[in-house]
Every structure is written in C-alpha cells, then in structure tokens.
Length: 232
Image: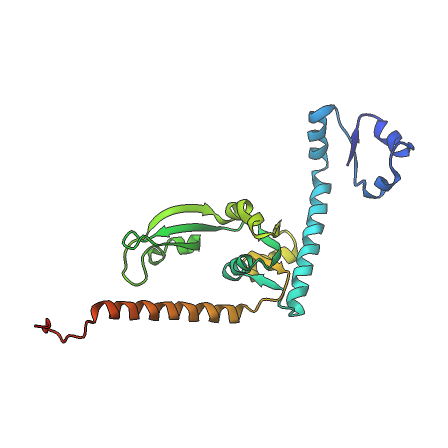
C-alpha cells in the first residue's frame, strides 16, 4: 500500500528512486492527511478492504492445499482436536490451521484423592455435562486447576512444537468446510501419520498399565494365607 498526500505518491511511483520490483506488489494508493504513525494507521484503515481480500486469498490457497492432501489420501494431514494434538506431540505438524473463532476451552482437572491431573478440551455443550468433571471410576468431583481458551493456548504454545500457525475464517467456501467438516482445527504434516495405529498403540499401552497396577495390588495383598489364617 502506497500512501501519501496529494500527488507525491504518484510521482514517487514514476520516479527512478522507486524500486521497480515493488511495482508488482503495490495493491493500492491512498491519500492520507497525516504523517508518521497517524498517517500509517490511516493508510491501513483506508486499505482494510484490499488487505482483507489479500488475506482471504492467502487463506483459500492454504485450505486448498490442505484439502488436496486429504483428497489424495497422502496421510500427511490431521483434523479434529485429538488427532491434531497427537500430531503436535509427535512434532509432525508443519502448518497448524485453526479457526479464529474456535469455541473450545482447555481444562486442567485434578483428582484430589490421587493428586493426578488430566487435560480435557471441551465445547460449550460438553461443559454443561457434569460427567466430564468427575472421575470415571470413582465418581469423585475433579478440581478445575486451569481453564483457558484453546485459541489462546495454541497462540502461546505453537512454537514449542516447531510448527507454523495459521488462523483462518469461515468467510470462504473452504473455510466453512474446514469449520463444519473438520472441527475447525487441523494441520498439514511433515510426514505420514497413521492415527488409527497410533490410537491402538495408546489403548494397548493403557491396558498394559492397568494390568500392571492390578498385579501390583494383588502382590501387596497376597501373602499366601487363606482368609482368617494369620499364619499361627
């Protein structure tokens, strides 16, 4: 955006002082009444429609690339909250794509009986369901240690996972499809990830942990005596 007063900007465009490589990327020329920071802010205000269109086109191109990965079934994509977070943990996400109005909160919940914390991601509808705030096995009410909008958490932590963050709107057809069909969060991956196999592995690991805990409890309670037999 080239901004200035009167004919100065037009004369600058025609001048040899203006780098010819910049001609191709001048989107708009606007008249401003001020210099310095006030003039800069006025130029942005007057160019809002043009700049918004550029952002929308960039967004459409990004989402088209994302949809191409899905249509070609490359395996180098993820969508929905759980798979996207798993891909982030693996360091596999190159471009993290998030709907700017994603209405999900991140909770850290603590079981006061065991001292264990767990993280859950809940929509407004899920927040109204009390079962998410009670321990599955014992029914103990869980303490809310932290609550944060997922959009804010992602903005603060995406660099920890070595990815690029791209916020998108639902103002394009691709954006609407991304929000309604893919949960408003996803990513383009550096390498192929089999999320079904990953889930099976996690379930097996969880089952093994449960069996190990059960065996440990049995060994603590079993001293080789029958009920009522104190070894005397």
